[in-house]
Length: 87
Image 1 (cartoon, rainbow, N blue to C red):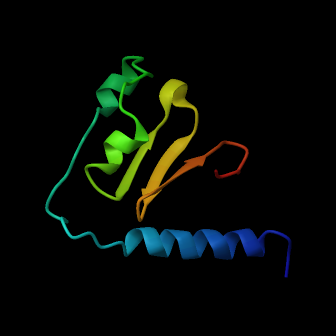
Image 2: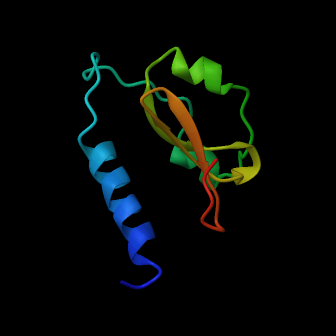
């Protein structure tokens, strides 16, 4: 088994969990900003993670100054960085 297979399996499990996620309010969508704003250079917002969690327990986005990808899964917010770390 090569050194990357463990990371691959963890990612595969994470992706399957993400894709199979069910929420009590599946018909509701909350959108804080748009891709158009990002394309126009709007890289800062004033919403906190707590604000976002009031609208659900699943989401995708980014952080101020494009400081990582945001994944909210089961009410836990993760920051995925370009170096492969997640906090």
